[in-house]
Amino acid sequence: MSQQEGHGQPVSPAANEAGRSGTVSYDAGQASRGETPPPLHWRHRLSLKLFHTWFLFRRGMSLGVRVIAFDSEGRVFLVRHGYMPGWQLPGGGIEPGQTARQAVAMELAEEGNIELGAEPQLLGVFLNRSGIGRDHVMLYLARDVRQTTPRLPDHEIAECGFFSLEALPAGTTRATFSRLREWRDDLSHPAHW
Image (cartoon, rainbow, N blue to C red):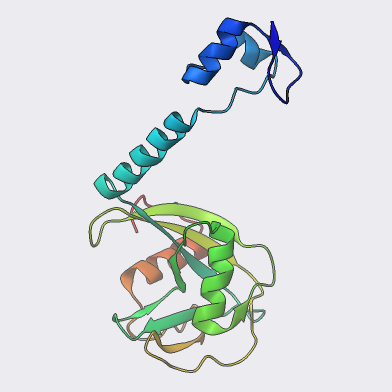
């Protein structure tokens, strides 16, 4: 028997040859004993990467966040984009390598110079059927947010501000109004945005 390099565990010559050829065995007994599976051979890793890339183009899906953000006075923060109509909850897509929590903080900062006051809470996940029908939205609640400086208008954000739930601005989108009503009245969320 030889010793596998770096592990110090005896390995039979046949098993050592199997490892070099890319065939790796790992049985349920090993899993039940808490043993870590052997690393995938480079060809398997490449195959998985290619499959995931193909799947992305074949069945691409987007994932984003929207935030019901309240200041200390109980007013909700809304934005009006320069490229689409209506007042909406702040939010946007989750970037590669970014967590949903990081996306919440980034979108609030970018769209309103808003800082989180408490840890955001996930309220639900929705399918947005507009567009290509593969857009999923994670809705978060953020309390005690604070605007560090006023957000000046630009090509992305035409206007933004804090509003009482009883005095939402004219042109508030149906989805925004619905999500706020569901939260306020403790209603169950639908599956679709």
